[in-house]
Image (cartoon, rainbow, N blue to C red):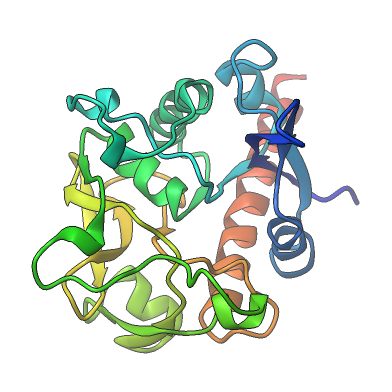
Length: 258
C-alpha cells in the first residue's frame, strides 16, 4: 500500500552564490519516512511553481521546516530592518495561506522552528526579531562552531502545560530540547495556544485551538535523531498517524463519490 504523502516545505538558497536551488535537510526526509512512515515530497515553496490549492490536493500533510530566512515582518505589521535578517517572500506567500487552509480543513501539519513561527504569523501573531537581545533571555541560536552533534545537542528544558496536548503526547511536563533559532513569538496569534516554555519564558510548543486536525508546532528541531530521541519520536509518530487518518478519510470520500 502506498504511503501517504507529506509535503516538506523547501527553502531557497544559492550554490556558489549563483545557482538558485530549493532544498530540504535530509534529516527532515528521514524523520518523515522512517518515523512518521510517510512518503516525503520536497515542495518548492514559490507561487511561480505551485499553488496552495494544488498542494492541498496532492499532499496529505505538511512539514513546515526550519530555515535561515525569516518570515518577513510586514506579514505581521512591522517594518523590516536589518535586525529581522534575511527573508523569503515566496515561501511566505505559500506557507501562510497553507497553514490557514489546513486549520480550516483539518489537514495535518507539523511546524518546526521557522514553521512554528509561520503558524503563529498565519494566525495573526507577531515575532521578536532577535530573542537574545531581550532582557533576561538566553541565546537560542545555533552554536557557530562544533560538530553537528554539538550544534543539535540538547541545551535546555521546556516546561509543558500539565494535562495539555504535549504533556499527554510526551508523558512528561518537562522535556529536554535543542535550540537553534533567533526569532520567537512576541504575541500569540488568534487561537494559538502556547503549551511549552523555555526557562527564560520563550514560547516553545503551540497548537491551534479548535482545529479539526493535527497542528502541533515546536520551536526546536525534532527532526534531529528523530528515530531515537524520546521527544522527537512520539511527535513524528503522532504526526504520521494524523496524516494516515487524513489520507484514509480522503480515500473514503473518493470511494463514496464514485
